[in-house]
Amino acid sequence: MDFINLKAQYAAYKTEIDAAIAKVLNSAQFIMGDEVDALETALANYAGAKYAISCSSGTDALLIALMALDVKEGDEVITAPFTFAATIEAIALCGAKIVFADVKNGDANIDPAAIERAISPKTKAIIPVSLYGNCADFDPINAIAGKYGVAVIEDGCQSFGASYKGAKSGALSLIGATSFFPSKPLGCYGDGGAIFTSDDALADAFARIRNHGQGERYEHARIGLNGRLDALQAAILRVKLAHFDDELRRRRDLAARYDEAFSDLNRIRYDQNSAIAQYTIRLRERERVALDLKTRGVPTAIHYPKPLHLQSAYAHLGYKRGDFPVAEALANEVLSLPFSAFLTAQEQDQVISAVKAVCL
Ligand SMILES: *Cc1c(COP(=O)(O)O)cnc(C)c1O
Image 1 (cartoon, rainbow, N blue to C red):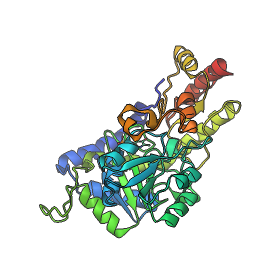
Image 2: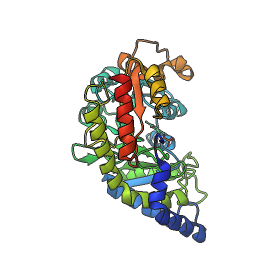
Image 3: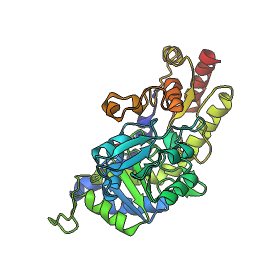
Image 4: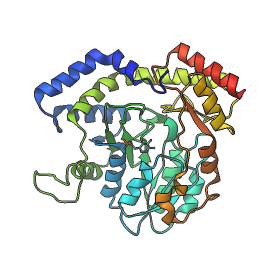
């Protein structure tokens, strides 16, 4: 069985996807153009934000957001130490200082009380990560940001489709960033991402930064990037977006079935508002369990084995083991099980009986 069954997904939409690709090839409009415009409109409508600006990856979505806010050397940005490295790369690439605030047990997302303790006069932005498809707790986070006058950028790279108190990921704070990496809840067939906002000036800045800082062609009013999304990826995403709510329903049904089977296991908490990017349990004997599952034909993955404050590239920040105990415990214990909208009932039964045999 596959950890994420992308082949079954392509087989399910093959006719539509092949036609969408052929249309782009025949048009020879490979960069920007109608497909990209149509996708951006569809994404903004889906998320409930005024604007969606597509871009080359989730990493670039975060970087473009920080560049548009003019985050630079001397500024501080608060985020979680338990996330994928891209979250903090974007901060480091702007020259700003990364300040960590620990996450919570339960959903593994950043603790709003820890954010408030980490605020300083230099804080320019907060990047809550909606990890595993679970939205971070945006009401208290936005309230803290309002109190201290700092911006909030949601790292929604794993949570496109999730919702929080009736609003969708991407539209939960001033800016939302997402990724269309193939294994994310909504994935393309390469790299891709998007930035959401309802602020006119920020949307204009995002659009310019992702295209070399240009408004008018060859007029470079600001420093930008080659951060555009390919028309081919936009066309593929438009097909997949039309099926996305069906996939989300399927993901939520499958997760509910895992929840029921694993009620005696320590696990990340999901609800029916989550996009459930990964289905993740927590175990003290993780390495042995992962090996035993492998011999029973069940692949697993670890998201993520080492928290970011202990990574050597960020040693200069001066953090040490023990600084973020919840992040450290999660990094030692998490194990993600096979999961996608195309996991079959038979495969799920196989996972459930293998996990029960090995852990319970
Ligand atoms: C995947 C991911 C990113 C980066 O997205 P890419 O499209 O791979 O650049 C950033 N943050 C988190 C939490 C992610 O899971």
